Length: 330
Image (cartoon, rainbow, N blue to C red):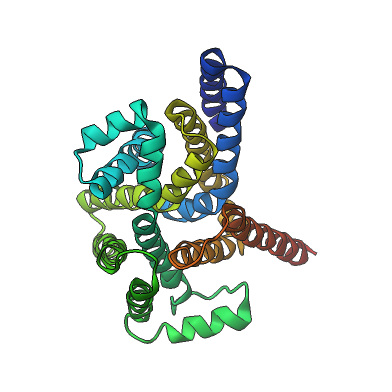
């Protein structure tokens, strides 16, 4: 539990600063955002743990140090500003200034860019989940009736790519947003997954010290893109609660720190090896989140529903894993 000492201390200091700055209202909002971020991102922690287990201890430490800086400043501050700058056709610096000087307008522009965020994040996460379920080498199945069939269909070359592209192409026609930007954002999400997965797979074929370092770097980039795909929707949702940037920054930053700490904890305790179906539940949660983000291009999906999808799948997978563990020890 020593892992959680640093995030706990930093969280208390940050929340204390928010209280001094904005009083009880700001304190409670920041606390609520941090709790929501941890609750809704637990499936992200489980999937990250599987990838992190393939990395050296050095890169695992970097995931908690450099990675947290990228997660807090990059995904939750800089990347939304870049999205707003693209949507509003202004410079990123102008968008950043707008976030602090006119957060209501910044929130409106970010909301208008939601279709692009949903298309990019939904397509990327869809590839993550489909790649897992169409893996012909996967021997352990949780929802056997479905997963065994999906594993057999995985023999079809690039079936996950065909399904993801078909989905994005169809949604670009029916989405309540310009067709071109939606299609482009979705294709970028798919392309990013293919490029990173391809580089990681090619490096895994070699075992020299240089390739181990390169593999760690590639997986590090992959984890941060995965975090971005998970978190961008949450950033937009945070603006529904408040438009005060410091509160959003502290709340989501605390949540991100704890999610990454949980990821490392799962790796060091070898939790995924003990709880067999937790990884399955996390990927079903990712699949549900991807479909929710993509469906949001056509109809409004309440944030509560999106959050519950992941929570339900991970909870059920945990219960199933505990039952399997008890039955194996009897």
